[in-house]
Length: 159
Image (cartoon, rainbow, N blue to C red; front, top):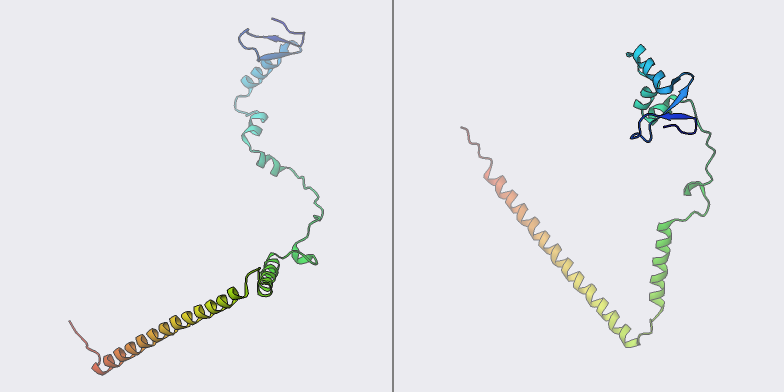
């Protein structure tokens, strides 16, 4: 079967296997002759295919010229955004607003809220006092144990 004059088809089953004519013989025939003449030499195409793209790129002497990027780090920019300062400023503003605004609640509510805050602080103070007292009792017990051990003296047991 012939195509439009540029090549010949080998078999009707191989639709994509075309051999192009070069002079009196086809290209695949010339490659077959080269393979028969020098079987020990690997073809250059095979050697290039075995290497990775990274290896081929490393062989090249190409060095792109990079200019200074238009962006600068925050340390080099004046008035750069600082997330921590922004959060701190927002929290401070919220606290000031809550202190100076009654939120539409009655005066009686605020009296009780202040009293509840005072009571909770007193409860916390009592809990802390209890913890301090317990730790001092533990320290006294440990000191007494150390004194008793010292009075007894060391016991040496020899085997």
